[in-house]
Image (cartoon, rainbow, N blue to C red; front, side, top):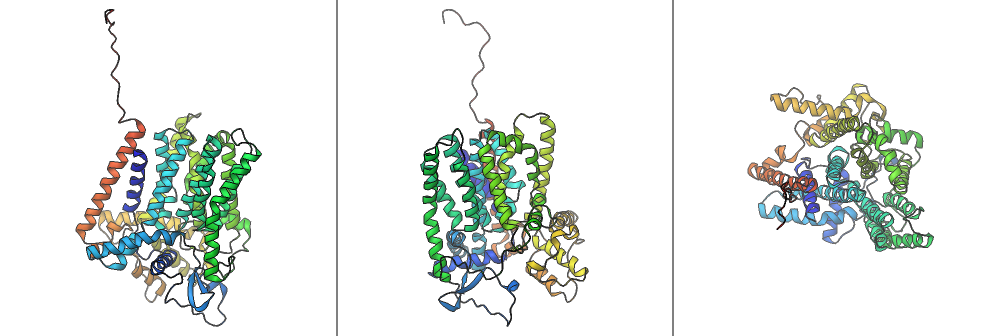
Length: 536
C-alpha cells in the first residue's frame, strides 16, 4: 500500500510541477469550469450567457459546446455531461479559500486549482496502470518502468495538462477493464463485474459515447470463451452485473439530458457530426502529418515487437483491446471535422494509450536479440519523451501561431473553423514539427539570453497579434517559469512551491524505485563456510 501511495504522490507532484502557465487553457475547460461554478450556485444553465446568431448562420459556425435550454429560449445550457464539472467543484472551492487566505487574485487562483483535475486523473491512471502491469506478471521494477513510459513518453502527459475530459474517461474505462481482467483471468469474486460497471459509469457521466465503445469491448472480453472465462451461465451473469453497475449513471445522464434539452435522447448538438469518408478519416487520425497518432505517440510503433508475444499470452484480452481500437477509430473516422483544434494530436484516441502501452511490458522479458530490442526501445521511448516534453514545456499556441502564419503566407485567409483547416496533410505546417522546433528555439534563447526566436506579429494582423498578447508563446509554458504567476503569487511563494514539489517527487520517487528493486529489503547475513562444531 505504501508503494501505491508513493507512486500516486510522485505522479501527481510531477504533473503539478509541469502544469501549464496558460490560464486561458481552452474553451472546453473554461465552459466546464463555468458549469461547475453554476452547480455550486444551484443552477444547471449558464447564467448570463447569450447566443446571438446572424441571419442565415451556417451550421459549421455553431458552437457544439452550448445550446438553448428547452424550457426557456433565453437561457443557455452546456452540451457537456456533468462528470468533469462535478470533479472540478472541490478544486474550485479550495481555490476560492486559498485566494482568500493568501490574498491572491480570485480568478487566477481558482483556475489554477481547477486545472489540477488533470494531474489528479493522470496520477490515478498511472496508479491503476502499475497495478495492472503487476497483475500481468511483470515484476514491480519493470512495471514501474512501464508506468513511467506511459506517464511521460505518451500523450497521457500533455492530455492531462490540457484538462480535457479524455484523461478522466481513460481512467474510468481502464479501471473497469482492470477489474474485469481480475475477474475473468484471475478468478476474482463476481462483485468485480458490478464494480467494473460502476467504474464505467464514471465514463458514462463524462463522455457517454466513449463509455459505450469501451463497454462493448469489455462485454466482448467477458463473453469470450476460455479456460478461465466460466461457462455460458457464468458469463451471462457477469454481463448482467456489469450492466447493473452502469445503470445508475445511464439514468442520471438521461434525466440530465431531459432537464436541459427536453428529451432523454437530446444532446444539444445542432451541427452535422458524421459523414466524413471513413477511410480518409482513419488515415488522418493515424498517419497524417498534422494529426496522426503514430507520430504524436511513437511508442505505439513498439507494438510491432511486443504485440504478438502479448497476444499469445493473453489472447482474449488482446481481442478486447483490438476491438476497442477498431471501435474508436471507426467512430471518429466518420466525424465530419475534428473538433477540439487546436489540440495535441487526435485527442479522441487518447483513451487508447494505456491499453496500447500495457503490452510493451513484453519488451522487458527475455527475447531473442534482447540487447537490440532494448536499444530500439530506449531510442523510441526517448523520442516519445521528447515529443511530449515539447508539448508541455512550450505553449502549443506558439505552434498555432506558426501554422496560421504559414497559411497566410500561402495566401489563405485564416478562420477558426475546423472544417476549413489545411494543415492535416501538409508536413510543412504540422504542429508537431513546429512544436519540437519551438523546443529548440526557446532552449536556444534561454541558454544564450537572446531574442533570436521571439515571435513578433506583422503589423495589422489581428489573429497573430491576439495570439502573442493572449498567450505566453515566447516563454516556457511551465507555471513556475511564467511571469503570470510571479506577479500574483510572489517570487518567494513560487520558489517555495517548486521546492515542495521537487521534494515530494524526490522522496516518493526514490522510495518507489527502492521498493520495487529491493533496495530497502533486509539482507540476510552470508552463511559461514567454516564447519559448525558438532557440539553446536
